[in-house]
Structures are given as C-alpha cells and as structure tokens.
Length: 145
Image 1 (cartoon, rainbow, N blue to C red):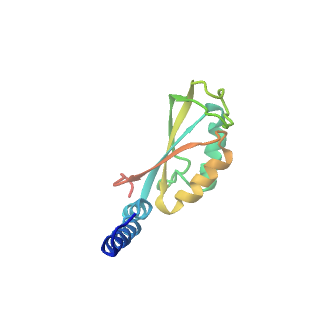
Image 2: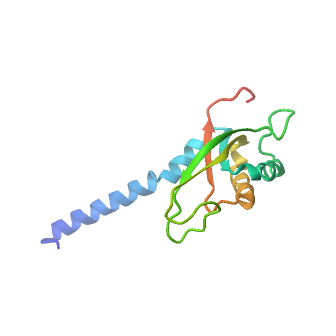
Image 3: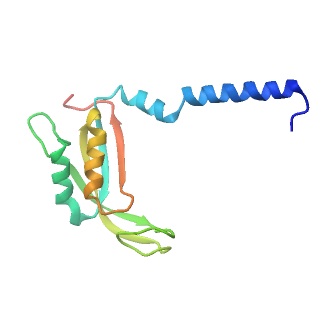
C-alpha cells in the first residue's frame, strides 16, 4: 500500500519505464533484429531414424538444403536422446514419468532465413514427436554465400 501521492507517482513512473524497456528490448524483437543480419541459418532437427525419408521429402518440398546447383543437402548423425514424459503428455516413445533414452538422428540442414517458418511448419507436419526439437542457428558466414 502506498502511503503518499508521491510514492504512487514514483511507482507509476517506474511501471511506465519498465513497460517502455520491455517493449523496446523484447527478446523476440531483439532476435528478429539479429536475424536480419543473416542470410542463412542451420536448422537442427532431432527425429527417429524411421522418419528420415519423410523428413528429407518435407525439406525438399520447401527447398531447404538448396546450396548452389545442389538440393536436398543435409547431414545427419546418430545421437542418444533422453527425456521424461510428464503427466498429461502423449509420448511417441516412452512412458509417463519414466526417463527414456533412445537413439535418434540429429539432422542438420541449411536454410535461407526467409524460409525458416515454412521449413519448420513442413517438419512439424511429418514429425512424430509431440514436441519436436528444432533449433534454428544463424550462420554468420558460409562457403557458398
């Protein structure tokens, strides 16, 4: 509870300054500004090996992995994924409240910055996981840009 009008005014000013700073330095806005400086990104996708061919088709359909006179360019490696489905989840693999560890693929593909959203949407359409792990990493420089 404020004890004086002066304290109320100070709090109002603090709130206005806070709101201004939050709007100006919103992490989403900052991320978008940073991304404007990059032409290409690398997308990492973690997916079961059984879905690799579906993923390749989905990426090709949106022209992800197009490098010069080549398309469908990607790399993948086998990794061990670990997770614990929590209450209310619908895991593709594993049981609620039990830690799972399964081999999966980490697929890496280069994508134009302007195609990121359509590429992520295409991946999500074929991905079996309830919450797919898809990382977008800006590339400062590539050998082909």
